Amino acid sequence: MYSNHYKYVSEIINKALEKANLDGVLIYSGHAQNYFLDDMPYPFACNPHFKWLVPITETPHCTIHYQPGKKPTLYLYQPKDYWHSLPATPQGEWTEFFNIIPVACKEEVPDYGKLQNHAWIGQANSCEHDSLQHNPKVYMDYVHFHRACKTDYEIENIRQANKLALKGHKAAYKCFKKGKSEFESHVAYMKATNHNEYQLPYGNIIAQNQNGAVLHYQHMQRHRLPKKQLKSFLIDAGCVVNGYASDITRTYAYEGGEFKLMIKAVDKMQRKIGKKAIVGTSYIDLHIQAHMKLADILRDFDIISCDAQTALESGLSNVFFPHGLGHYLGLQVHDIGGRQTDENGNTLSPPELHPFLRLTRTLQENNVLTIEPGIYFIDMLLDDAKAKGLGKYINWSRVEDFKPYGGIRIEDNIVVKKHKPVNLTR
Ligand code: GLY
Ligand code: MN
Ligand code: MN
Image (cartoon, rainbow, N blue to C red; front, side, top):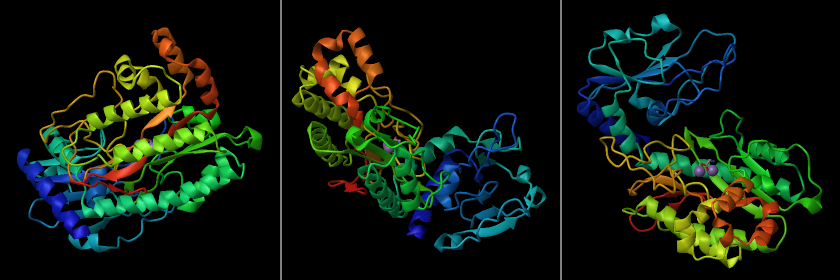
């Protein structure tokens, strides 16, 4: 699979270089930055352009020198260092496609400044040579647009990242059912997925009860709630395989009842919307359809009194669903290029009422994206709605009934196809 992936990637890089009138490119893995006034680094996050070519995701100070028509060279940083262990010797099919040269210190790195007509792709202030163009826009736009279409190799990695995350989801849910704390669910997730905190694609969101109404809830309460107080469990957690992320959310009710029925309704509409992620569809349209369906659910549960169209146009549906339907997914959790309409860097902004929508593109084959509708009961947004005169549509006593449950989000990872999308999560 990697060889086809390499072929696709190298064709895109060749074309991007041609468009940018460049002879070659240096792609830097990156390095960790220190905290302010400190010698402790923030966790290292690898440059996605680098991970796209090689599945080395935890090694800073590496560079790939790529020139069209030549075997690229990977300068693999292997310092003489008794503070850290050395990165493992690279293995796998991909290694055949590179000349791999270990470098132990700066002095062993070639003088990239002597290269003619090259660009440097890497984080801010990482390029030490004025003669190199730093992240030239023409190159970046071209790559970012085409990186949205995933190869079989990439899809397989995201599939494996789904499989692994689902093991963690199961373990975390089991803890909830046993009455354990949010933090205990988190620990069970980490154990089941064999990830440490730095390897997760994003901080786990593990919420019981009202905490599910905080979209990126981060605290993880250490204490257990008495079982009779347990109402709901929302887990948004993913994994990484060869640099590729999964991003999955599930919501559960502790017992039967209306909240469980609402989860079922959201699950049903989520699956339906997911099946519409086919080639040629505007993701903005899917987002709007999701709003309409969620508004129908809110009305069915007697939470709002107006019809879906009114809920959409008045902004009422945003009160309960205040984020985008989803985003591209891959080497980044929110993979780049979601608003780019072409390879020249033109973009399409989201509709005015939906500024958080990260993906506005018309879908192409093998785009990988999330579908993550939700319904939340968020005090701040409910207060705003009242202040804006939308309170007349809201059945406040029903809102009070649901508030203790926090919210619902259901999120799957989908591969866009011509007729039938592939759901990597279900
Ligand atoms: N977990 C972050 C997101 O769903 O976008
Ligand atoms: Mn997501
Ligand atoms: Mn998520």
